[in-house]
Length: 67
Image 1 (tube, rainbow, N blue to C red):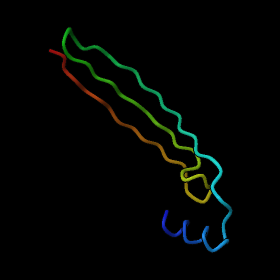
Image 2 (image 1 turned 30 degrees about the vertical axis):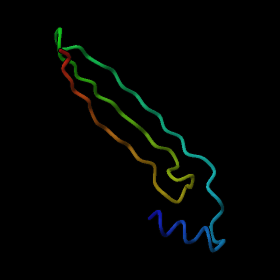
Image 3 (image 1 turned 180 degrees about the vertical axis):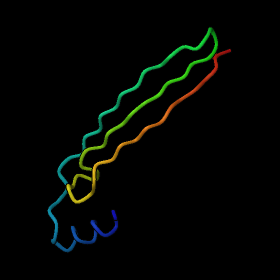
Image 4 (image 1 turned 90 degrees about the vertical axis):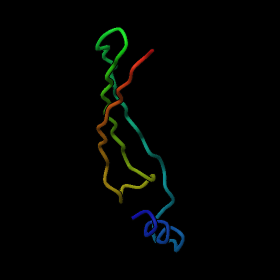
């Protein structure tokens, strides 16, 4: 998708990208003295600076231990 968009932009068929916005939310939960779990959510608005590409939602997590 990005390659096709770049080709159209070079040919003058699409305007230059404007902006991309990323919203990110996360919270670290301490499970005990040495372990944690951190879920996060990201929402990408106007990827690659163009409305031609759909917005994206990303859900993930981090987990860790501390010695």
